[in-house]
Length: 233
Image (tube, rainbow, N blue to C red; front, side):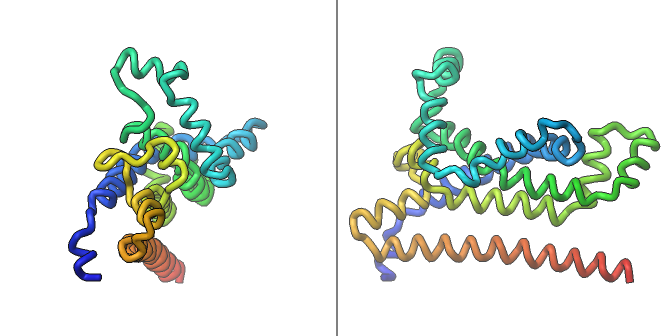
């Protein structure tokens, strides 16, 4: 086993963490205004927008991956546009993985942020507006600092979910070593060739990482709840 461990290629983990990091940053920028709008609007279109945002949670990864693959292929208007004007192919490369991951992990960023915004005391927001702060200033200087557990949960869960994704990543990116062969795809290929020792090691690493990520979220949230409880007491 130790000999196998020494011969393992850890590039798939590096790719997984790189993909998760970039996806998380992009989604945070996108999800903050979207979650804010969903938390504040009374539009009749809100349920439809919420359903569309949450769709990746219930769709089979193969279905979502197929439609993303079709949408990003060079035969599609979007894929042809990026290929012709920017020389970027959006499938079977790392760029395509980022785009696909942003679609797939969107609800994991939006929903905790929306819940956090909805938990903010409305009087606090009104006081910010009365003080002359814009909506943007209110979001970043009032709302986000007062919902740290929700922000941390959104960031960490999105990161962890992206690291563990398999179906969408495989369909859109394939398995190109050093480019799209992330950890989850590497494990799948090890099982296919019956290299169970390597698969065990890779899987154990993923389990440990996932556990530590969730532990960090719960420890932080519990500490924040204790602070709030102590303040009210």
